[in-house]
Amino acid sequence: MPEPFADATVRNRQPIVEELQKLLKHSTKVLEIGSGTGQHAIWFAPRLPWLIWLSSDLPNQLPAIKKWYKDFSSENLAPPIALNVSERWAITEHDAIFSANTAHIMHMREVEHMITNGARSLPNKGLFCLYGPFIFENSWLTESNRIFHRKLQDLDRHMGLRQFDDLNQLAIAGSMELIKIKPMPANNHLIVWQKNLTSTLFERI
Image (cartoon, rainbow, N blue to C red; front, side, top):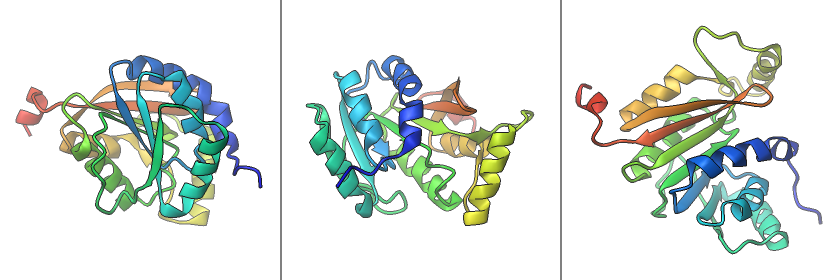
């Protein structure tokens, strides 16, 4: 049987990994949330050889990830783990988190858990990198993203593109501060927060 295949991972992997090579140059272990088929993991790991890449997803996704791992192995790929963002997280000692195209698929309550629990799991100065399409205040939503948003809500009214401001407030509540919003191809963005336990920003809250 061929590996499960997600077209989007092939289209966006190169611009993402180019950013991660700069962002994660001082990281040692990355937890990927919502790894899906595992295609990002097998592409990123050999291009980020100084760190350990740990995939995670719901239990039913692990067979697909393991199949890609078997056919495209890399020394710095850790065995994937089951992770439900709304439940207790395993202690994995990661110092960075990456997640792509998950916030608009999850229900908002799950997004809240992903950011809140993710922030709690990071050490000071750890990075949280979230990729996908988002809604920004005072910015036009492109027609393709409007259509995508409507399609998601037709499938499930709890899905859809998320407001950046809502995500950023969750990050701030988790002692993370925004350090970068990088426009990416096909109307996507890479949002990067950093855990900061000493910033005066949090002392005022």
